[in-house]
Amino acid sequence: MKATRILETCLYVDNLEAADRFYRDMIGLDFYAKQEGRHVFFRCGTTMFLLFNPESTSDPDSPFGGHGARGAGHAAFEIGDDEVDAWRKHLLGNGVAIESEVDWPSGGHSIYFRDPAGNDLEVATRTTWVWPNP
Image 1 (spheres, helix red, strand yellow):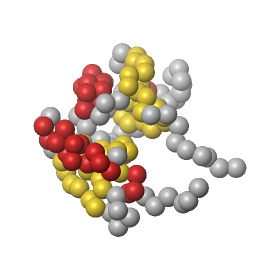
Image 2 (tube, helix red, strand yellow):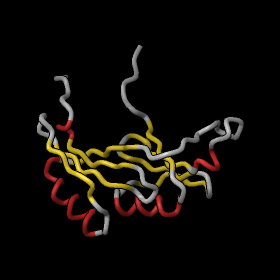
Image 3 (tube, one colour):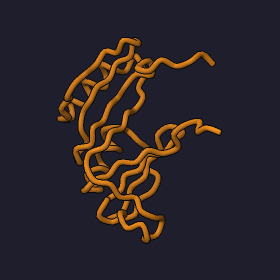
Image 4 (cartoon, one colour):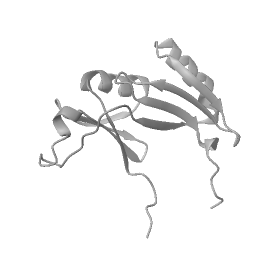
């Protein structure tokens, strides 16, 4: 038995409104659901990207269980090989500082930046990782 893919990824943010705008407008995720003060959920392709307010979700006895963490997290979003320059221009043109860029030995490329809550984000080409032949 083994897991076959990531179903959802979650980050924690202290300002849901700012995060909602950032992930809709900057990253281009599709809105799915929102509960004021608690969470905002997005679709990302065939998976889910969840943002939680840790102040409202850290109690394990609360409805839906405990979803609380502290500190910055990391998420990487896949982009096409031909989209690297466009993403760089998009981020810089919208005042998002690029912290670093990496050309990987596998031929992939990553751009690193932060969301409004300080989470470490990455847009990366699929060739950042070496995938087995199907």
